[in-house]
Length: 117
Length: 111
Image (tube, rainbow over all chains, first blue to last red; front, side, top):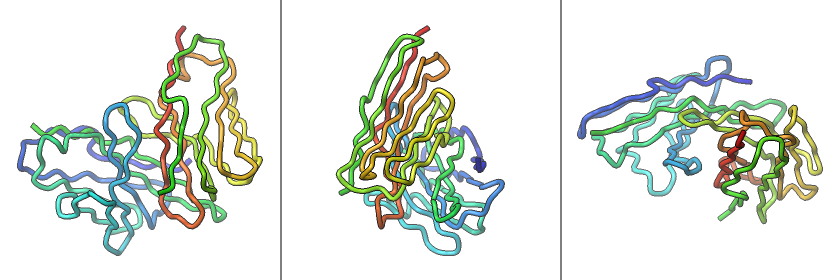
């Protein structure tokens, strides 16, 4: 299957600072990537859809000025958590969409554990 | 709102037993995917089903897609401790571009 990487895997930052998370599709080009957040023992919650060369589409309740998304190339999307607060601590996962024979599939990165102190 | 109900949410069984996880909706899926996620990692795609009535097998895992494409099941035969993890079903509803996830099934196989 397709491979998606995420960096960093873990990050600890102080309250008020910003953190950037990178998501890369390693062996395919992804016009569309997605950013999810996962709370302990829960399913994935979609935050935003990242489209190459255009603005991201945010889900209801997700602050676009706090979670900045940039999809500058067909293999890279970044999520920047600005002015981080302890409540932003979570597991962030990206996925990249691949289309084969008109079937869309999403391949997920390994996730980034963010801890804000 | 298009919802995807997954059941059971928790399942703990002994090694060697069989189990089935269900994924249901009142709306039609254009495709449905099953993922397995281990703690601290991202979900790994197991299978994609597209055609109503479709059955796919992956070793001891059997995936079925309902005839009406509104439901799916995952059956594991002779479960092993290595099958422990969070199983997620996720589907694209017809006309939608976002993947909708079920609540997940946290499976524990006891040796």
